[in-house]
Amino acid sequence: FSPHPRLGFEDLPFSRRLKKIKEFLELSSVPKADVLFELGNGIAALRSVPTAIYSFLRCMEADPDIPDHYSNLQRTIIYCISLGGDTDTIATMAGAIAGAYYGEEQIPPSWEQSCEAFQETQKLANSLYELYCQRL
Image (cartoon, rainbow, N blue to C red; front, side, top):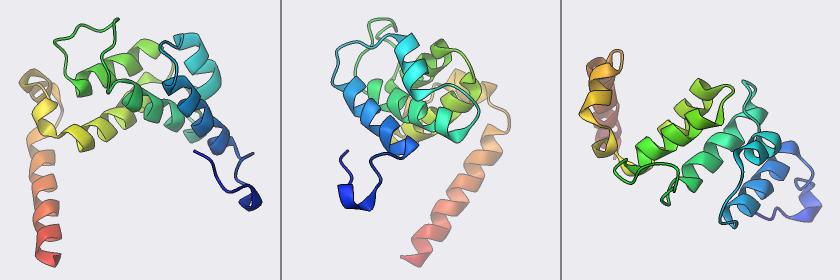
């Protein structure tokens, strides 16, 4: 990520965190304490969105701390929870990104059964998709 210097984005907080995400992804291993310190794990967007993005991107690859039988979506959520702090916010955002990328096939049936209003939400999503297709 290299914003044009004349636009003045390079010193904005999100820009600094996006650069840090890129740096972290180039490393073979990043201690969780460094992720929390540099990207955050709070309720504010500045302290949670970068961590969610990093978690999703990081978990596209296998993680030695998470068993291989988990899907990429599961691995993303498990990693977010392992960070501590405002895990529900970060795991929800990262899980949404992973779900959009990988598709619902990676959601285990046991998770579907545990989710509140899963069937209703799935019906709404299908209705939105149908509306979208009608506009094409």
